[in-house]
Length: 222
Image 1: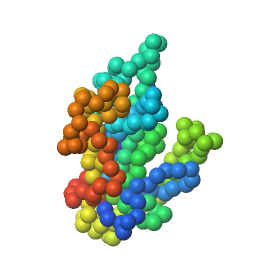
Image 2: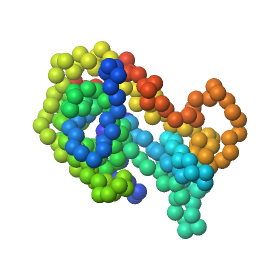
Image 3: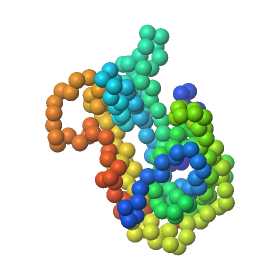
Image 4: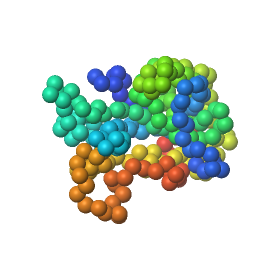
């Protein structure tokens, strides 16, 4: 997908020496530089009767996914709302490392809107750094506010370009692999397992430790 494909509507309407490849946006302040294209991630979180909490990424949007269509309250409200988030490669200015960040739709929309307003692809060489302030009231993660502030234009340096061309970007399609419709209920613990098959990897959540950098840097506009 492209940055312009980030839904503008409010929601509901490389190798690095053993360091984490993921930037986890906890309360605090961050400065990042988007690189390449974003990836839409449609997540479900289900709290089961046994106390376990299951997660799965859907290959369908809310209008067509079986979870949204099948599991409804008597009032017609979804019992397991689909949460749309966006993942993308970025340069973490704190340590200048290439990382993967997954952000709420509200953050991605603000990056998208900056690009649309300025007619610039935020992940291209003409993009800017974005300062993201994460503010949380109390322990509940749902009470989190994100302020996104575009800063100065930051063309990729020669060193950064060489790094992208050598290692490519992290493979978002491989990391955020969705579960097919005929398996997602089982993965979320909503139905009993039908078959145990150790060779079936499509129903398993992607593992962070196995993510490798993609070898093709074509998604980057220098």
